[in-house]
Picture 1 (tube, rainbow, N blue to C red):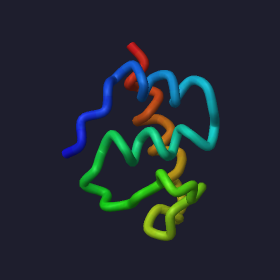
Picture 2: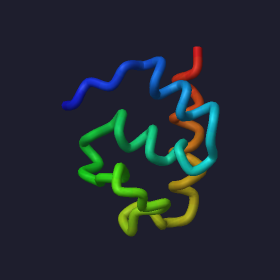
Picture 3: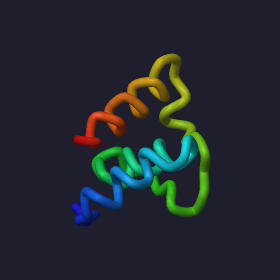
Picture 4: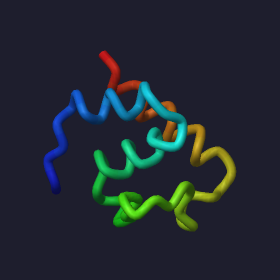
Amino acid sequence: MEHVPLMVLVHKCVTGGKLVLSCHLRYHRQTHVDVVKGEEEPPSLTTPGSRRKLIHNCSSLDY
């Protein structure tokens, strides 16, 4: 698992809507989705409610 500094993750979560999804996926590499290229919403995460859960999980890193 690639180590990403927590402060970078929190900063991305707080500063931009589209970056929230990227932040979560880069923090949880087991999703096997590469969002660095700029995909706003990967196909595997388009099920109803998944985006909301990602944003919630990412926001919870801000402590």
